[in-house]
Image (cartoon, rainbow, N blue to C red; front, side):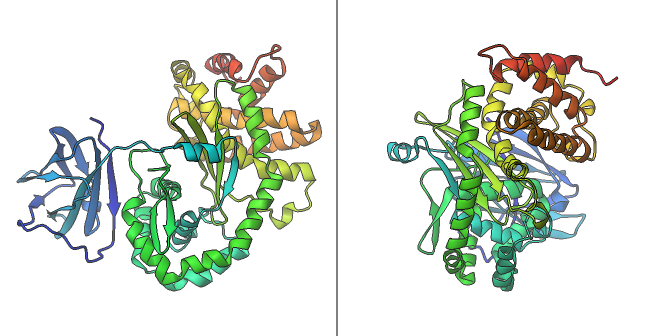
Length: 463
């Protein structure tokens, strides 16, 4: 049984627990406990880092699960059931306080369900959206400490409007809860909470599941679901829905500009030609004008319907870039969308060569640089995929732009990948991939070039 543990710090909100039995108490003298879920042993580490209330959710297959927790001095055991909150307390010796724990389970379900109506409405579509609940969670992000980082785009007048309107609510329980999650594990929770919000829609003042997706981000549960009641209250108190409606024209203008200037249909056509084994029934681009540096993608396959999603920032044009040649500006603006959508094509192909890639990229110190963004690509497959990701940008740009424009854009890509992101062999990789592409045989595709570029990587040494 695969065990997924999600650790969530939440603010105390007067939770009413319907337990009539005495609340079990465990005494912890160290930072680690041993736990068992239906007999499966796991370590429960970081006890001393927990807040005063702590919530655990296990994704399981069964309707009831036996949970046990063991310390050096005592143990407790209880039955966990979906949608029921089981409470116990941990008395910590090192911090001389008590943590109230709320544990539950939830059943594993498939991430997306595409019925015939959905398929008919979306087949062959390229859709650009700024969804309402998605914008709500991004506004909450903007009010947190994490919102002070580059994860939030602050250069627009819209950002100032958001801050002016919502700052009076920055101590709301929803904001404080999300803030504590982002302090605990910012990269994970920012991505998952943002992406998973796309599963929800407003129905009056209530936020409900839209009936298509259980979750968007990777994993086995929707990380935002637990916080929906708090978000509903925040939205109502802050007048979020009125704010969102007041900015509908702004959102519509952003979507129109994006659709007019970022040719997603052209990208899809090129990628499907180069990766003929991979097809998508629909592509969605999910935007927020508040998103800064974090971009991501998801792919779904259900009931004979496939969908790729790119969750990206809106490509604002900085004042200093407004005088750039039109094609240079176009290439820069479309890059983020392409680098997310192309994962839907390049990743399935890469997985076919997992072992060969593992051998070629086994020493990641030769391909990444510690302390640079590249170091987060910490296994062979994802490292190779990111090399291919921006390598594909060069191939695509060489096909759609004139040589002068391509040379300028490609030089910028190589410099950013090597000097800023730390993919130290990208320039050589990119040039070899381009050589293979330009010299490919009639009928060969990029997918056909994978064995050759992997073999090159396995033998390449810097001279």
